[in-house]
Image (cartoon, rainbow, N blue to C red):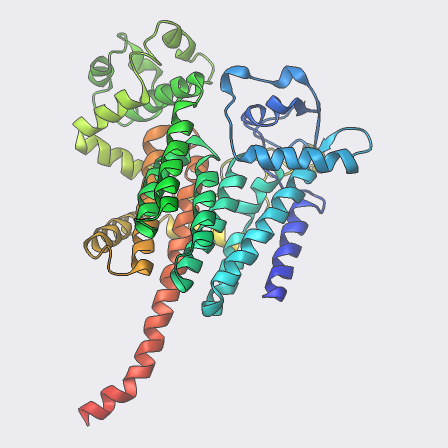
Length: 449
């Protein structure tokens, strides 16, 4: 285990610390995290490359877009470290990479310890967890880094409970990791409802189980309720103009059903922030954000099941992609705009080459697994954790699909983390079946003889 952890630390350090530094470019979301703490990029650059240095800048704040996130814990820790290591007061993005990296290695160590009975899967865990698709978020202010770290801790704690039973200490940690995962970003909140229900399954009669379930549910409600109004309005607009209308065979009729002005279908495929977008006008008139919300669009899809499936099928085409179309390198490194690192990309390349093609079968396999495990729920704690994993995976996919239509690949982050966990669990299960078959094969031969 020590050698694997050392290898993982070397891989993460190579990507996040060694020039050319690997990170993930800002698409304007950084101001929601680092802006509220009084910093902004020294050289603003978006989409194509990463900014290395951040300087005190009170004007970088965007009050209408700010929201609490468990990612704030890592940012504040990085600022505390920066006070000791910075000579000029600037915040180097690699300090964020260092803080994220330490937390990741602690989570990975806990996961490897929890899976010590299945060491055959350790190399696969390290291969997946250190892929550039996940590590690139460490040198950024995206909340996906917090989602990744707390998801690893939650998975590790779940395995520990399956292996050694439920204790108050383990249950308290499980509840804490669940809450911190949910509080990373609003897209994680719907999965929190499932986690709240499962907290009762772990300890239905204890005060801790009940209090934990209530706390997890409140955390989910908090993230949904405190999501900025501007964000909710932009999500509703993007769902209509980037999904409903482009996927429609009668866009004018669908625009009228939703209550949009005549001719709105002409803006199909134009996002909220694109040039000539009618988003600001429709929001000011109260059409987007009041009359048409995310819930309005969801009701539209529920009333048209065929359209809902068409939307799901469209999202399945990109759901398994791990890497958004954002640059990985600093502009000073001399790479083309939106250049992406090719180092340690084996697992993300596997996603693109194989899992993208198998997206529909995998989706139906998740549905089948969830249904089968529901039928047998309550018979085995390990099997019930499989139920939770399958349903959280589906919930994350549906939330990313029907919660927004902008940057869908990045919003599928938690879905892919849970999908990778499902694939690793399936590998362990199949390895166990094979081992059992080898043990039983001599008995079968004797019986036949």
